[in-house]
Length: 512
Image (cartoon, rainbow, N blue to C red; front, side):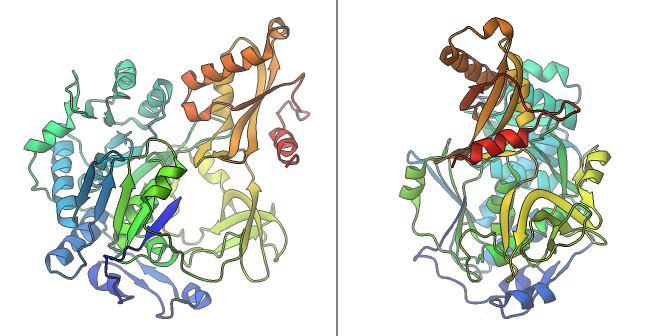
């Protein structure tokens, strides 16, 4: 969820093209009539330099603007703990602290350009500093949700070959338990008030680190970040993002979708492990010079969110309730049939983004170390998003459903394969299939259809459900456990033996 705060105490700039004057190394070429979507779409062009680094070319430019008194007194970063603590940093302070962090990565951790760093932190200021420090050093950041289990962490460390991990005291024991199995891991940093053997204490190290650091000169198409997906047919896969895909591509989000200015305050409530947090808690707002607001908020609490708000404003074209709206000016989006042909308005199909002959910025570049999976996402000149929908006569897109089996519950994307892998560890589970089920609060929840082993068919079913749920909570991230369980005699399958999750999902949603 994203919230745009326009506080009365912040004077709104009236210069629509101010971003051009600030960011001289690249520019967005658009018409001046921002209310005309078709004109913007037709004339949009993003000019990209050979070298680009968001820390140097955006954040440091705002620092200079701030020093010159050309930016309102809006902070660059504003964080509240929920229990009275508060942090406000200007762009200058953000730059100073992130350069200290960068020196720790480069000197204390001996990391070099291209090395991979896993960052598993909750919504605390150090998460933002870690991201910027990785930009400054040219290291590749790999964010992860704090709900990862020991097994999840091991998989990510081994798959990514990360040389460094940054986390807190909650997850440090899980890292220590698997570190010996990760030959590439040589540096561990902890955000904690207490020292821990074998770990560098970030808070102490920051006190002594130098703020003099020269940002690495990165090419725009160098790898900047890796995110692990929630796969439907296998373990999570790594998706690669370049410096330009986020640092430049998301300028479209900040400028057109969110309509941000240096006077605005932007609050995105996404978990720090998801790419959405990078989009709307780092790149989109800061490329526009807006303030990033963050609330520690360990879990989603509507009451807390409503108590924190000043107001919420939405600006743009005519809104059609229920629709996705129109595509970003930077993307050519179509509804496609199974052969990659563009379908006319009103016909349902797969939502695709044109990536050939030129791949748009903002879209991940490829699945890391998995060319087969990368190729499978292409259909002709289009990248298939995995969403089904249709376009109406006015060019508005309407979402129908995921073409895969991903479950979206309270903002978390959950792959059924991961849950099914946890379920099978219980001796009572002979087979299982996991699908989404409607929920009035979370939108969707995980539901497991389970075929019991013969020895457990006479057991107390309610007690068995509780046992299975607790096992899943311990085996994988707690948010993935099935809140609903139904025991059935057999699962629907294809002639080749594949489970028909779509039939089970349809059964759940048709009851609404």
